[in-house]
Length: 232
Image 1 (cartoon, rainbow, N blue to C red):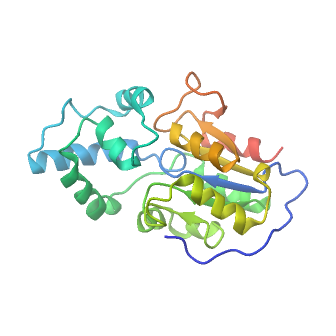
Image 2: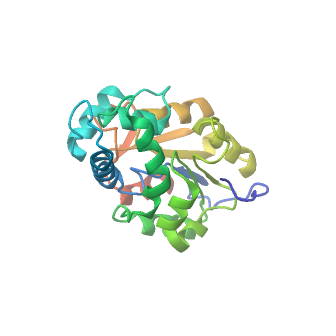
């Protein structure tokens, strides 16, 4: 859920192209696809659930995800379907919510340095994700406090409102024009959310479901490359 609310606009240094940057979390900051798929295999086996097709490895999942993403589906539901589960997904949902947050999930190389460096440049940071507050707070640890107060929106923030709504909430809190915000994501739904909120979008090719051959947006191939887009 969101925590508190930041007040008013604040000038960024003149060399900063985007004074506010909002990140998706999984596939942008957190290298979580492998752990997600491992968890599904383990829990499905434990529950005796057979997927429609074998749960893929990360590379195979990305190829399947690029071709099958449904921007109108709930993110976790869409993920379960791409992993091979349909009507069997409900008990997996329940176990995921209860247990996945306790799993160790690595961050991408350079992700924490990116957040720290942007803050040092005067950039204000937020996260809009389909993940849950407790999970992200645990995984980021003290780096969670690099976010502006109230600028974290997860699956437990305004259920059903969607990412575009959350981005717009941050825009209002920041007191800036949409052209002063960058949203960084790794899925078609992220690009659509940025479009609907009127903000610029940056795609990452190293995440769950976008690559340079499938997007008509600027693309970076490592977390360390994001800074160069933000600070020009």
